[in-house]
Length: 125
Image (cartoon, rainbow, N blue to C red; front, top):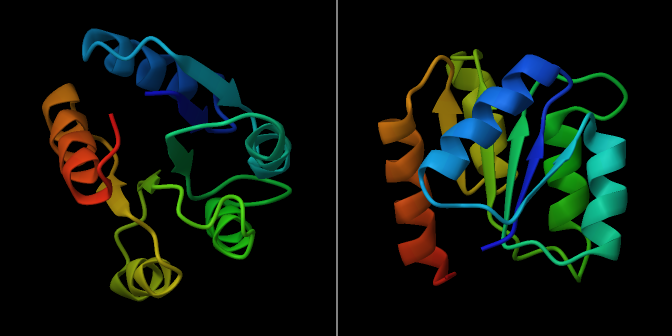
């Protein structure tokens, strides 16, 4: 499974990449913001997008909306991570067809549960 990790904070990207590697996922790429992620998504094939919600230039919700409105990317599973726990914001993400949502901070066990659920729901390897 090829995974793109998007977060404007280097430390958070590194933590996420380390967690994913500990779960056996080694086909990883990263982007520093939504614009960079969108460029990578349009030129490479990914099985899962894990993105932060709050980022400059193009935030996670805007990235999600662009992915869902792109015929090539529309079915890509998107796992959103954020310290945001506002119900209204989360409801907006659900309406925008986010696949999953994890509230920071979280641990490897929680990440594994979400990825396993996405793999079952979307039937990705």
